[in-house]
Structure formats: structure tokens, C-alpha cells
Image (cartoon, rainbow, N blue to C red; front, top):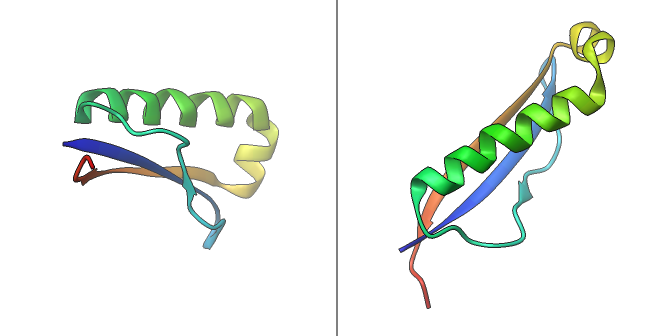
Length: 68
């Protein structure tokens, strides 16, 4: 099995289209760890002022897929 990481950035109730990570992960752990790291880095790039003003959140999921 492989896992696909998908991230969505939301401000208040408006969310961007889902972004799918460019490669699949070998384990749920690897997918989730990168999901948290990528979310953290993106929030830091946006900066505290932007995140606080816009109530920005980043949601992610790791979906299991058949490895073909």
C-alpha cells in the first residue's frame, strides 16, 4: 500500500482547491509527518500577521491507495 498526501489551505470558511503531493508515501507515518512539516513551513512562510488576520488553517489527509 501507498499513501497520497493532500493539503487544503483555508481562510475563515474559504478554502483553496486541494493540492496533491507530487509523490506517494510508503507508510502512513511518513505521509503524516510530511503533512505536519509542510503545513508548519507554509504557515511560517505566510507569517503570524497574515495567519492571525485571516484565521488561516491547513488541513491535510493521507489516503491509502493501491500501489500499481
